[in-house]
Image (cartoon, rainbow, N blue to C red; front, side):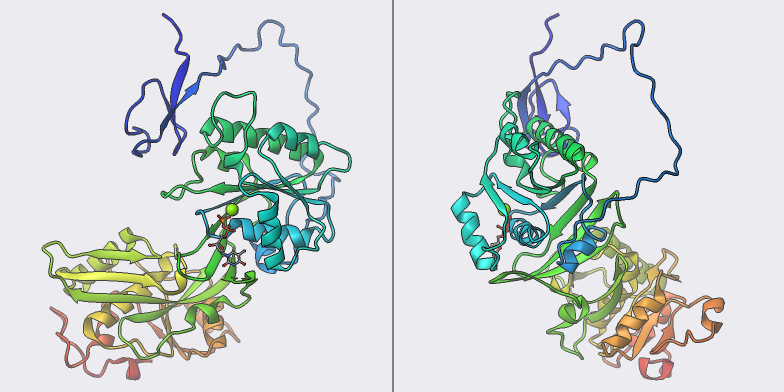
Length: 478
Ligand code: TYD
Ligand code: MG
């Protein structure tokens, strides 16, 4: 039988199938299968005799001191990278088109160029366009070596020189191509091969490689999820369109912690660092309105306070709407179910909208209790006290579970002028620890149904099955 000369590769997930179809069976995405030539990669084995050179193994302990990291001086960027860029490493910066990746990396390159030989290769914009942007960012005088190129062969030649750059920005990997491959730029095969070539070179020469990658609507870096395996660090640059906040999030880092974030604000002069994100996320907050709760969250090692807003309104539709921005829809369904099943609160026939103000995306389960408080507050019309922060994970049986770094969250809340906290019970050991007296009044909730009476205003319907205790309101409980 003749060997197939081409195959069809899904540009979203990288799956390869022999026949074209409208839909990729692997990821369910439509219209992503693109024909690519088959590269002969049949494994041939080692053959007779092996012929390899014997490896020299060594111990884990060694004297190779790690080379110093290349620090940009943009603290939010350095933090997300785990304390600066590592020589000989590859960093992938992913994000939606137009979110500000080019701006961020041009600014970073401008700073790095003060101490390092630094190159910026743009495959998307012409040299003049980049210059214009640099002028706007106020870094036009930085000694960045700029080029507009898309051929990996040319770029490799430039990198492989003795006086080649120490830091290289490739904007973007989807525009790069290798002339040894038949596929078009941006296809999985091209992106994979180009990245591999550049990364190999970077490792060999100790160059820090910063790759820009566009993201598909599903949130995977376009086409090659394989890219995420190949690089050392994956940073996502994210933010809600229409908000000026941008968050640089480490999702993989071989040289540092993940879940660290850097917060930026997009201004007309580029990206500004935001050293105190809580103040920014809470700006514009109106105190005593119903349906809003301040969540004391944690992003990496950093506490961040954000407002969670809920709107519960009677639905004109047979199937009520559930719309979520900045949080997980499945998690909202769970909190709603626990409220209904364990606390006798009826939300079912209402539309529910949930929004994390400021464009942050929260992944922490610790936000459960703040979501429940915002929902109850919107349902009853009773505001969550303006000086309270809320956090805690909700279990399926309605229990409120402890979360990590309680003290850090409380400290941040106190710093921003909050005076009380609704939170899970703390373990006895911690509570009796000398000097650990929290700076704010703490209301410990062991069960979710203890939260319900706090929102029991006279106008609202009393929760089913559990008569409200009039003495138990927020004012008296703490
Ligand atoms: P850009 O860095 O080109 O996005 P990406 O490379 O991720 O596609 O950013 C484009 C957006 O940033 C654009 O909508 C305009 C905005 N922007 C500013 O608001 N201020 C600025 O100083 C710059 C350079 C861009
Ligand atoms: Mg760009």
